Length: 446
Image (tube, rainbow, N blue to C red; front, top):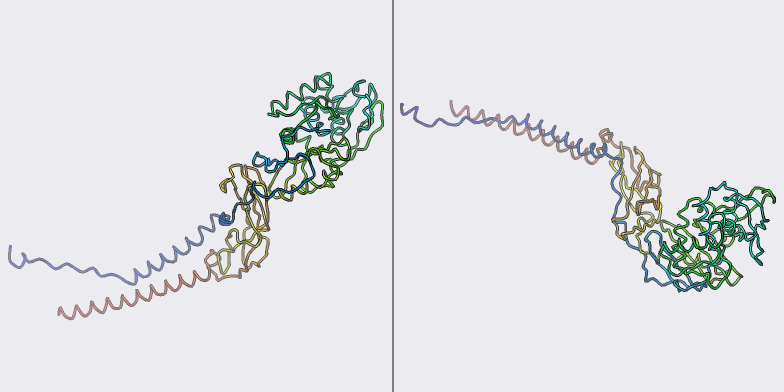
């Protein structure tokens, strides 16, 4: 091999086509801009609810309100625990709130259309008590007797129901006591179906809250308890009868009331059990040894303190940005959304993770004006919906440039456009410089 061929041959330099490289980079910038702007918007109408807004509220140690009732409890059905107590384990007479158990057992064991024949025992006169004034042999539908026992607290109706279920009142009372024993009520004992005063007929606020929760799991009983008026059809021995709801009268149509029953022996010896739902909070209130005036006012006092006493979470607050939504053809691709007010949630695990929020946001297109209603949100605790509200645009969004149809903001368009122009210019300059250098090297070789 000659010396000339043995010498190392110089590497051939690869010339970069800067113009093509610049065009490729410009195209990449364009594609990335479109993908990063359009794809997220195409996959969903909005962004997640801002969970940082969920903050604790309520404290069992909060100052308890003063009430007239001798014994009371406020039992959170959301948390499954008492959040307020006053002598809650003191044995007292329940009076006619006894009838919720009677009516519950009747609805669970009787055909509502069954005809019940009044016995001599059912028609015995009870001094000063509310009655249908049934006659021996009078036939009444079971469902009508339930309405009468719940709405007007008919004592004879309650006895007739008990006899229809078990044959005799005493056997039915045994069923009542067996039932509440199964529910864990250790300080309750019944001796009659209607709550007639007796030293051996007693309960506690705590036990009655348990009984109330179980009884009103029956949807039909809940409906009957909240019926404003009911006309009982004529019987074989009596005319039709219009009934009005004693519970609604006694509570002055309490807002948030969901079910309940009143009881009394006199103006100074009154009871009540009721359920209420208010801003995501559900609870049962039982008052024993109350007055007629206290029975009307004490529930309101406890309800007004319920959120302060019950551990839970404030989920939203008015005029707060709670999430964002995508906007087509806007100067910005998203709009901040405000909620419609204060909402609460009470998950059983007493943790923020127990609160779930779902949003339903409309398909939005600019222009948008601040305050426009653009969607709804739903709050869930314990897998049940406990609140909802509207979502409103938190800002004005004007129409954007042509690329905004692909959810590309004016700012992004300007930045991406500037970057593309700079890349193309730089590619042109580098290409010119590269060609000039190549010419210089060619001259030197000649």
